Length: 398
Ligand code: KG4
Ligand code: ZN
Image (cartoon, rainbow, N blue to C red):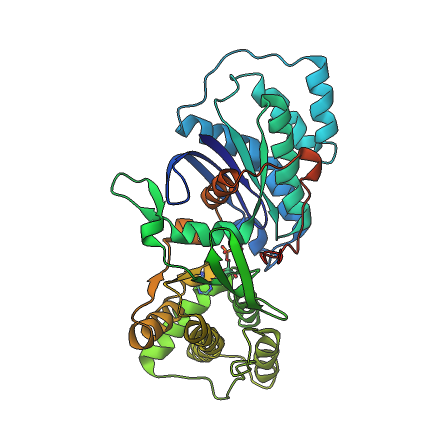
């Protein structure tokens, strides 16, 4: 079956087209088209993601990305396709809150034939609600227009399932049960999330613990701002931290590693960021070397709880696979420390850190999760497809 997938939960606008086949035990997914627009340049000026700005950017970019993904997939067939007054009226109703998207959509869809797709998967949460709603309203509009069923997807499930996918030589993504030994543990680290999730079986999740305040990526971004480094701060801090580490430099103060030895799987990053702020307030303006030294000490402190809590979960649950995903998994030092931990203490566990295109926000992962939900017999009624900014993966006990 062919799935159109839409992701708009944060600051990436993404649309993918997947061809999917096989069951849970041997799913095979081919990416036919993948179009992604990152809003980082837009948000850089403000040093962070602004929900209403993100929403406006999603609304402005969804139609061009849809057309690009369809073209890439060879599924864009030009043919005059006038809409009936009823269709125009219905689309206007569905996109009342996105007038720009409505205008773009009606002029675009009159130019090509309805694509041959079987389902539309869209992120319903967690994320920024205004941003999520744009994707959902768009999905509902396309579902109405092309008479295709909808499936609402949890963004974090997308991260986990795409983390299980292997890329074959031909470029297809496969998820085979022979590759997966349950339980699977996932350390999800991004600008919005810091959590450890246990997957005991297909589509069954337990959130072992999450951050009680800021996400780790958010701490990287906020500390970067304190150091006058551009947004997103993760890569900037990482680069300077590496330089300081090579020189053997550290900050002239020590930093806390909040909650790293508590008896649970929770994290906390607000206090670490505040500590950096207080220490910096006490200092004169910093030289480049000093900035790098602070970046290094911050990165060291931020990594300790990630490693400690992952170690705790690995000991308690002996998972067959550990997935590390989310934008912060691109951090070389954090990767290295987790790799060390697994190689030295848990050699039986297979560590998987997906390539960046699957690790950071994308629509392919939404298509994968959508396919697995469809395999489980799920569909989402348009009226039930509601943005849930705080959605959690916890499978309710039955
Ligand atoms: O997963 P992602 O692309 O978007 C969401 O937040 O969902 O993650 C973005 C976050 C940002 O906070 C960014 O600073 C961080 O990932 N990041 C990094 C690195 N690259 C990106 N953090 C630390 N080191 C990096 N190399
Ligand atoms: Zn994400």
